[in-house]
Amino acid sequence: MKVTVGKIKKRKVIKYCIGLLAPLFFYLFLLMNIDLGYDNYKECLLFIFITTLFIVMIFVLPSLIFLNSMWEVNQNSLKYIHFDHNLDKTKYLYSFLFRNKYPRYQINLRLSQIDFVQISYYRYSFYPSKYLVDGSGYKIVFKFNMLDGSQYIIENFVSHDRESFKQGIELMKKQGVRFVDPYHLLEALCSNKDINLHIALVEKEKNHD
Image (cartoon, rainbow, N blue to C red; front, side, top):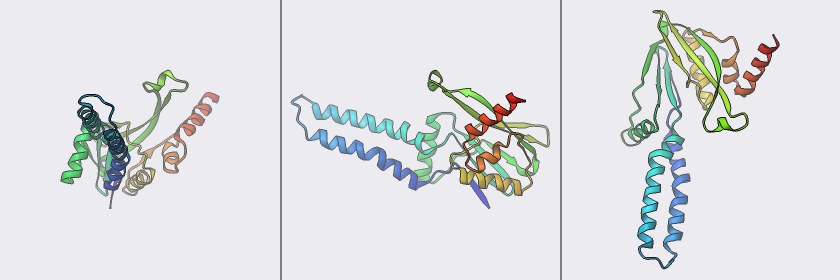
């Protein structure tokens, strides 16, 4: 059995392509049939359209399709990759579409070599919303402690696809991976609870104590 979290789906790519490109072609068709009386009007319009199309295909589409990370787990190992830059997402997206090739994972851990996984969190402010009211959130941290004493700290392990995330966690548990979760974050994540609300209650209890 294998579970991939954050997996690219071609159906999703097609849906976003239609949603992004259909309005562009529609407005291009409308504007090309309007004569404003300017010289080189249509040439300028085509240049703007091609530039916009390039930006959408290179920067916007990959950001919508890809999450910041992707991981895969089977009975033997856990593999993880984090996309540091948007251009990385672009490269991996089109490599997948045209060559059906998934990205090479950056971390590969043998499940039998994991001592335990410690789950914690911290509060952070993100730009530019940090300048707005309550412009902050929480990062969930997964610290993989290995039997040889090494540690792998992953902050982008949680996926918006909670169903596959839950399946991946359950598969690791079945293979004997132990999770140390004093704040019951994993339980909240796997049950589709609002994690920010859950942590707010945890913080309230800590302050009360």
